[in-house]
Image (spheres, rainbow, N blue to C red):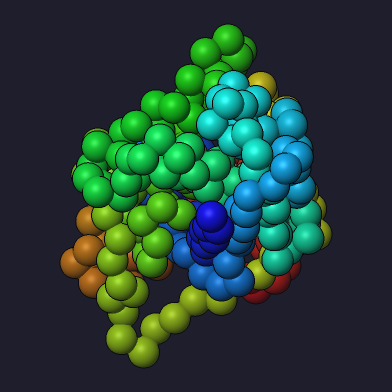
Length: 238
C-alpha cells in the first residue's frame, strides 16, 4: 500500500481576517506543492508533522487508523511558514483517514467541504478568542483560484479571469504565529473587511479589473490602519 497526496501553496488575495467572522475570500493556489507520502511500515513513523499541530492532533486522536504506517510530509518552503503547510498537513491526514476507512473523500464535494471544516474546528472547541477559519483548508482542497463563499459549501475553484493581467507573490521574512495573533483579535470588528471582501468577489466574478484593484487597495488600507500588515509590504508595493 502506498499513497501520495499533493496540495498547492496558498495565498489570500483578499479576505484574510474577514473569513474569521464568516466573510468570503479569494485564495490563490500556486506552486510549489506540499506533499504527503504514506507507506506500510512495521513501526509507526511520522516525519515533518508537529504533534501539537492540527494534523498532529488529528493523527493522535485517530491513532488506530494510522497504525503500521510511515507518514512523511514534504514542505518545499522548508518551514518558512505562511503559505499553507499546516493546513495542507491537516487536509492530507484527514483525506488519508477517509481512505483508510474505505471512504472516498472527494466523492461529494459539498458534503466533504463541510465535514472537513467541521472536523478541523472540532480541534478548537475549548480555545479562547477567535479560532482559525479553516478557509485555507477549503481553498487547498478546491485548488486553482478559490472563491470561498460565506456559505462555505458553495465555495468553488475557478480560473484567473483577467486577460493580460496577472499577479506576483512576494514573501516577506516576517513570520506571524497565528495562534498567538488570533488571541489579540477577540474584540475586533471585521464589518468593513467583510463588506469589501464580498464586493471584491462580485467584481472578480464579473471580470471588472479596475474596480477590483480599487477594492483590493481599500482592503489593504483597512489592514494597515489596524496594523495587520507587515512593515515592509508598502515599500515593496511602491
